[in-house]
View 1 (spheres, rainbow, N blue to C red):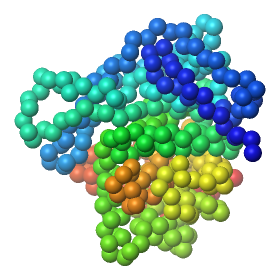
View 2: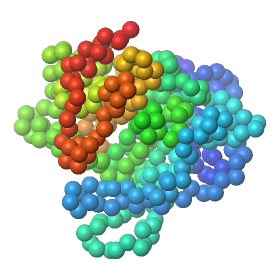
View 3: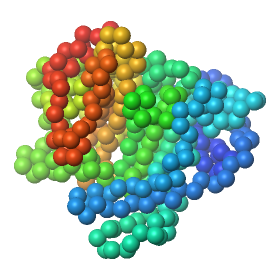
View 4: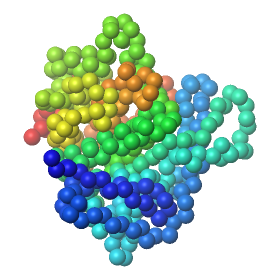
Length: 373
């Protein structure tokens, strides 16, 4: 069987890894090969990040002061994710591309974590500190600067899924990595620094707080019932049906019963799988179609709003310990609560973590069904 996506690994001028994921000719069949050369002169990446554990919560906080100088909303002509031209050399040393993954030049986590990064701080044993080892990658979904994920179509979206799956598998093998987190931020309201359609991958050396909570709840549920918590939630949502937006052969999209955000929908596989790398071909095909569909519905949610800001976050099982308590799902959510209003995380949410919703999950699901194709 012919290969659907061909990977080509190369290096940027400062030594960072870049991988082309080609799904078009002449590259996918290797009729032609990628011969890329980064003609820029770049200093080595200096990621002096460190982790400090909050003694009051036990949570790790990452400090990455070098990110203060990262690229911020450049003009289209200066976009670092557009293909290179004879006049402009970008992060992608090619005149065109399908999907590309490369190491972030301004990583929050990196193998260059330096324990002396905050040598001026006190050394009280209450403040546990360690280098912020890990890896941060950028995923450019398309060479088209003004496109959106929903515009990619199922074939190119499937290539993105394949790229995320391949990187999940590779990063899960890196010593010390505890979780691989794939996500897309879209919109200035979310805080994006580049408008070009792209996502990111973080390989954390610790379990993030949200994952730690999910694992603990799943562990308690299994000890009490002998079953998977996320499987039971999915089955209950499908039985109830009120909050189901779409259901197919391999996936269901539903609004969770305790949705926090003004728009929120979860994409869950029917089969118990730990991460994207574990998905089969049919599951990946349906997921690519479903993700384009749901993101298009999000953009149609409000009358008169062309592009709704959102985060698409892939929750994957931990690497190593507690892997059996994780289950893959995608959480798509937006902080826009009206055409001209945002949901701000004020006192109750930010200080106490006690969420107050301005709508109901049933209304969200009804609207997402209404704006479907």
